[in-house]
Length: 336
Image 1: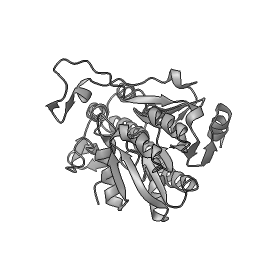
Image 2: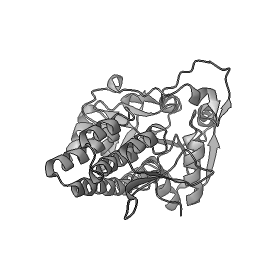
Image 3: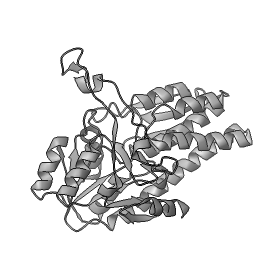
Image 4: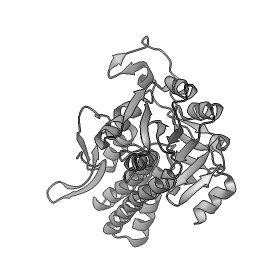
């Protein structure tokens, strides 16, 4: 078994640390990255050594606990952690939750207990998402997914990938189609790695080939995750998701978003209000240190895009399925 994506370590000699499975090294090497300060954890978040909205929330919570355990300024640490990546709502809310617990009590151990509680809740949410999502999967399904939504992105077995695993174990999955997910290849590097580890039958394809599969009748269901869901049901997810939703709608293929309730942000009114992270041009113009485009080329590199609610067939959370999610049904969901 590979090491977990994230764990807390309290070493008698080295002191407390947040230990991460460095996702930038996968799939060729399983290397753990030890963060002994919040600043190191911020760097790990920004370089995508740890990623995925729910897991970022957990990481942010443990980052505050790390600051508390080492006697650092909690407010300053929380501020830097929360703004390490702007689009995934779980990061800011995870940080705020643990900071509030620590500030209220004044005891360093409370911060760690709250971070662990958040971790346990996200772990339990995976099982709920898998169970509810399975109800949408037909027998013999050929599922298309984008980016990475497994244990490398969520506190438990995953969000969208948890549904895939449930379908596989139930004997309903014929094929998992995995978009490469350019420019950083989280699908080819991470989802394929997780699928192989679970014995899931899969095929990797270029992002631009997905509509061809749909047109050929080779896709029964598209299942993706989310980094932030606005109050009106708009979904921010890895760049390329919106294009898949448009193609799926054209071919009348169900487009399903799977995410824990913590990814729903009622303070963001609609998709236009979601802040989209813009990343370095070098992620597009180079690959593994090799120059792909002429030196000095400009690049457009948004990390996420926004899919409007009208293109979403269903939203699966740990407490149930919302068909054609709306502002009212999302509000009801958060009240459960």
